[in-house]
Image (cartoon, rainbow, N blue to C red; front, top):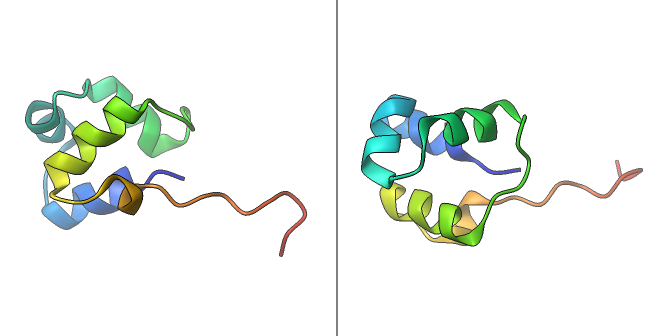
Length: 69
């Protein structure tokens, strides 16, 4: 799971503003936040992490393996 919404809301900015700051299209941000797009490129992660002032690994939390509780 990519924590775009969490960090964007912590900054108090809209998807459009994040798109402006990061250079990532707003449609991509929306798809990542809604779960419609589960993966993304390293470049996109880097752009988002840089916009949030965070490391790339802070944006990504691996999903639990199927069948794990």
